[in-house]
Length: 423
Ligand SMILES: [Zn+2]
Ligand SMILES: [Zn+2]
Ligand SMILES: [Zn+2]
Image (cartoon, rainbow, N blue to C red):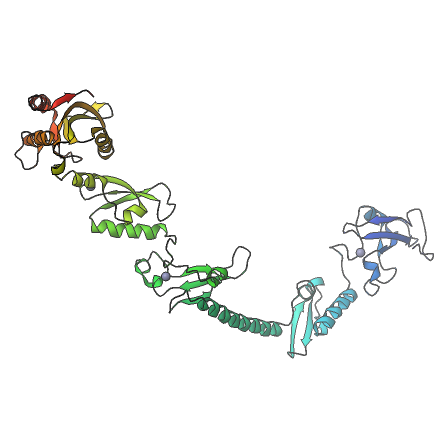
């Protein structure tokens, strides 16, 4: 590729690799010396385009060439001449059907404005060379028309999709579907806003804890999946569940004390509340909404029956005395009670009273005997022996007696038909 018309030296004939992978071949030099000595080169990419880069037009000094610099279009900082730019503009006009009218008078390199005309829209406009060549800016009037067409295509497409959703037969009459401006993870606009004739007007919406607009995807709607609360097990948000709980607490005069730990879902999340009797409870959302209420109250309600089993009168039964402790601290009252299986009963008591227990005495007899002694000691109706000696303000059981009566109680039992058991 050596050019016989150019001066030659040792550097000529060598090839260099440019930064963008192009190959620069040194053809010869301009026979000048010092700073003015320029080598004429051939670029494996640019020189092929002789209209833009006529033969002999690529020149550069040795220092720049050796530092990897390409004196051609491969170099991002290449300064295009007006002639070259005009070539590029005309080429793009050939592709788009526009007509290049003129450069604006003020030349500002790539930011020089050019005037163009589009015979299709009969619009003429001005645009910078940079925007026209590098950013694909076209006729703004054409752009407006294209957008309009694509919008009406989308509207038609949306209508078709909505009729597919409705065709599943899963959405109730009155459902609405609107394409959302939100994009999914892949940046596609397949998200829809759904309103349900029931859920979009229910108590949550009225209470302001739900917008009434449910987001879903094309695919889910095509399968007829309802994104609203009509679907059982649909996730409830923390404010929505909070609203449900408050509603129920209002009915039973309870107080909401707060969530326990992180709200995970509308079923298993736990919250603290207090019943109208002042018992603190920690309950999961689902059982609470399903009707579970205060465990202390429910325990007390169960033990409110007088505990007499007519059909079991001759069965083996137990009377027990337990001394409750708060940790290691003994309390100033004790409990008397009866049970067919005292160990099981104690286990239940511990969890309700949140105290530790120790069986102090255990007596055995028939159910008939045990029941009679128990009623005598602590039975309902203010006639029992120790009715006047109950601790005030202790609510977990109604069979409690002040500790200073312990000796008298034991004496009374010892004199009964019951037999003391080892425990
Ligand atoms: Zn090049
Ligand atoms: Zn619904
Ligand atoms: Zn309670």
